Length: 124
Image (cartoon, rainbow, N blue to C red; front, top):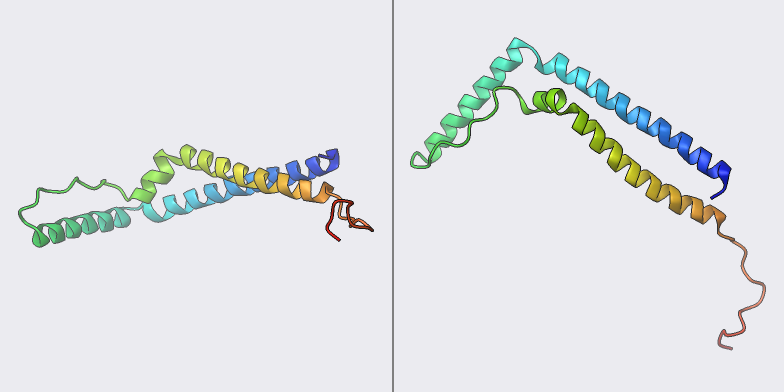
């Protein structure tokens, strides 16, 4: 790869990683602002109870299902597992970006000139 092409790809990659991490941080801030309130916690408890009662009414003979979390799952995801979310987002972004970037760089380096005469082994 040409040095200039590689530098451009690396710069765009750094910008994309920065935007991805920034976007996830913004999403985390929104989740905390939205779901870290007493009202939302109460709403979650009401939903849990309603789902439990519905399940009991549908099939009373079935044993109780596993208890749901005391907090909304999105709140747990963005508080306890945030580093994992960021890590996997960057891993997937990297795989996709560099796969496409290498193909793009290869396409740019390939000669696009068509031969003036057919090859010698071409059928007549």
